[in-house]
Length: 194
Image (cartoon, rainbow, N blue to C red; front, side, top):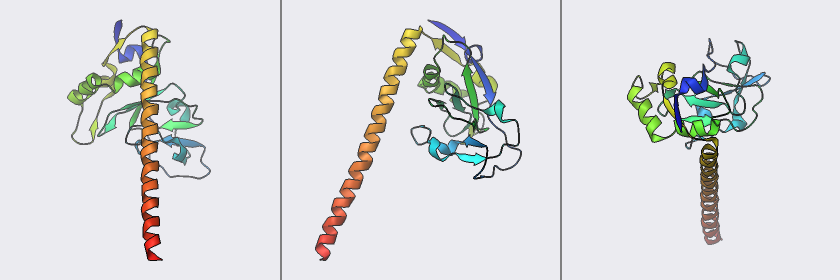
């Protein structure tokens, strides 16, 4: 297994910085991923992204499948690997956009590593500000990344993907169970009103 600083294995770009407040435009040409578009488990909800007209060259801030978004500003500094083709979609300025430099590092593995306690402790010890803290690009670029063989990275990604899917199913089951319980209770009350 080798080790490298993040800047050696991934390109790091700052997300889209608007000159003025972003205005939602129904006929806009691009969509924008913002912090609010992630749920409490840091899963992207891409169905309701803000649609707008970018003021700057959008190509610089466009994201594609395999890119990693790293939340640089906020309470939590998490990483998310984009799994889908998101056409005409940009990442907001609160994110860094990471793109792996070679095929020896799986983006899903890198995103997983950035969310691990060792990396998170590194960020916490170097974050600026309290509450809504900030991770600088230089701090992020110096994070050591362990790089096991691709076969091991692939196994890690597979296990993590299965765990995420299990959590999604458990969340969905809990939501459906809650609806069922509420429906049964309401029917019981309505039966008493007759």
